[in-house]
Image (tube, rainbow, N blue to C red):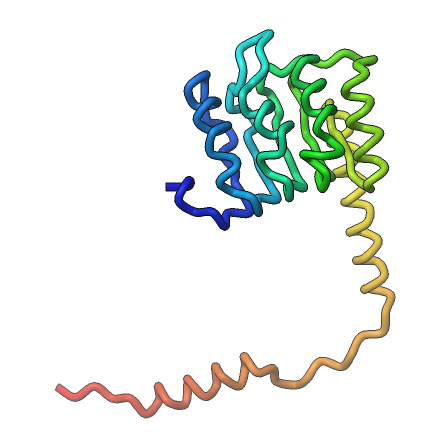
Length: 184
């Protein structure tokens, strides 16, 4: 059914076990969604250990040129997958700004991951490879929200009307219900 919807922009299939057949099938249909901007295939077992998923191959070749957010956590990826993604980051994934790769095999000095990080940072985006980065980002977002709340509290507020529209509508309904009678 999803394959018949070419205007899809957001797909979240997180926490489904694809296996080899599912990964091959997904790779084959990705190009059917050229406007896709968010794809979440985290925890989908897209590859067996030591193998490259056909999904990564399709993405790195440009199956979804408008993709901005790509979530691929916990899919048994290793260096070969990162190499393919880094090779396509400028052409096939030219709009990508957020790439989540937590809980995949990752080495601190992986050159392909460094390339992904450098390119996405240059775009104002981010590659998340471990939980610490995600937690730091969440804390930063919470701090910004707290600051907005503080600013709103410090700003002079407008006087609150004696009766809001909701109160008036409730009163009008109550008046109408007072006129209702049940005859036996």
